[in-house]
Image 1 (tube, rainbow, N blue to C red):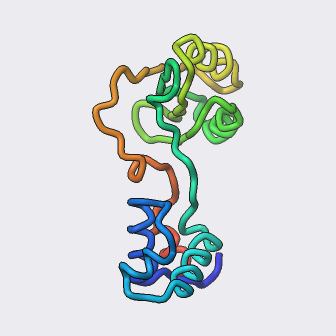
Image 2 (tube, rainbow, N blue to C red):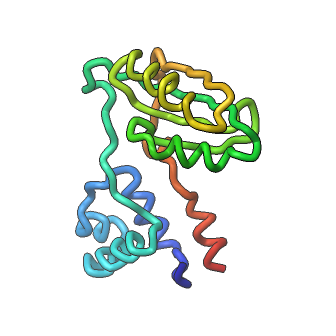
Length: 164
């Protein structure tokens, strides 16, 4: 990791882009009182240093039968990281998190229906060496989902701490 540290301007840029990633450098520059070139170079550096990443987020309402599922996994204690790595290799799984608590691992996926959830949980994850138990929770209704908060990424504070 480089010695680059984000400052107040970088944080303001990140805030604006987290609200609307399609904002032009010109609009950001106007709002913050800097030149377009300054903003362009800052955004590029933030991307290059892995402080930000631009990505499209799936709008679940456009899928035919969207099924967001959380799959809790109990694994052999000595194999938790190995099991998590194997689960992460599954194309159907969007996030894999090692936990302290009820489960050792949480896998999250967006599926096309219940049969797809069952296929992955029962026929793929349960077959991984070291998996003891799989418990699936299926989302039935989304009351609130803010993709700016729900994105899974390393918090900015960890980048700053690592650079110090």
